[in-house]
Image (cartoon, rainbow over all chains, first blue to last red; front, side):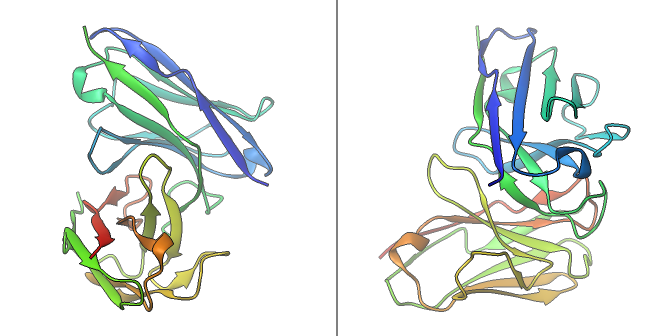
Length: 124
Length: 108
């Protein structure tokens, strides 16, 4: 059974940093692209960042480029999101999501498994 | 960037009703369109991928159609567990995919 378990969310002041983790199990983690998707309170879904199975290719939404860093440790089956220079508008539930496609950037991409989400609140 | 719109933004329906939700892309995305269901406080769940392929384990009352810029999600006979918000997502420009704003389906 595929499981994704996020952790690391919490309350942080504007300008602060936070590191999210997503522990994966039930599939060959290194074979699949992974993404972070966020949802601000009462709002829709926004793709944030993606990473290839090897970790060699990374992609970011313009809204977080230069502030967030996605990475993965395939030996630990864990995905990360390092968030720096946090702003109020980054407040959201952050989900990690497994791609159906093995290759990042494949047009047949879709997110077939999601974690339960972790809440990040940026406020003074 | 490819923009996604959905209509209606919300709808009220009864158990047993046939429900249709529309998603439109700002440019042609071929069949690279996915549908998700999200219930309050829960993560989204993949229903349909590649416009019309049913994800494993999803009831057959859900179906998707369309190509190019116009797509539909149809629930043939609405069940109590189907009251939720539905999102479309284009994967044409993946990994920088974009989601529609959502359609909330509630009880009439």
